[in-house]
Length: 227
Image 1 (tube, helix red, strand yellow):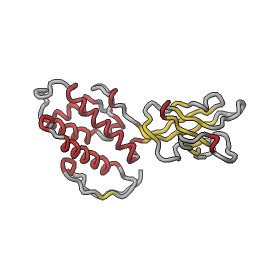
Image 2 (image 1 turned 45 degrees about the vertical axis):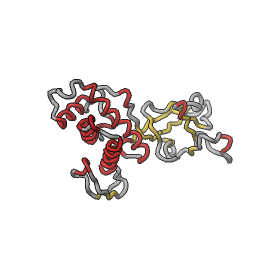
Image 3 (image 1 turned 60 degrees about the horizontal axis):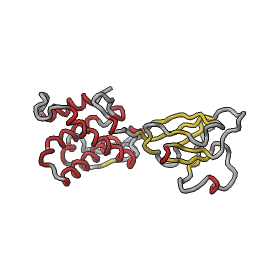
Image 4 (image 1 turned 135 degrees about the vertical axis):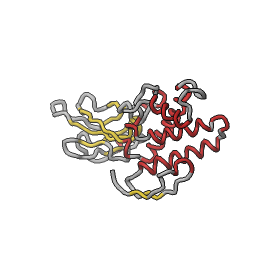
């Protein structure tokens, strides 16, 4: 597992600053890494990138069904098929936060309808198993968020290191140009960073992208496949 101090060491190599002459402390470089991670969170949520998926099992009982805590690293779900019963394989029906359970008409089995409460980082299920019934296990599939504010030089790199190389290149380029950087240049660099991530990781569909700028090396290709 790679930690952030190793990422910073590699950024220093890109900057030809392994002696810490221009950037005397790692704490000066870390904010640029954090910025890349924050922006990556938004990109992952928007494009549902495969490397960021994870799942967690929940034991649903008559005592806890009204308020189940979302995972600490929860970013978002992908579509409306995120919560599944392990015993039957049934996908629970997700209803909008703007509706109440009473708005759902018709008879439904227990543990078949759910609702997210993002304000409280929880989710709710409409009907619980009876008190004497067996516990029902449900699996929540979600996209993982990296808390950039909590990153230190000793932290593991997020998403299992899937974005390490691109974060190194982005961070190094930002630092090379930090003294004369204009807003428009930062926007362009982010667009190229975003394109590079999509080129490498959005492989659940055909991608044909003409890369430009710093991410053009080795990233101009057509890729097929399904994760």
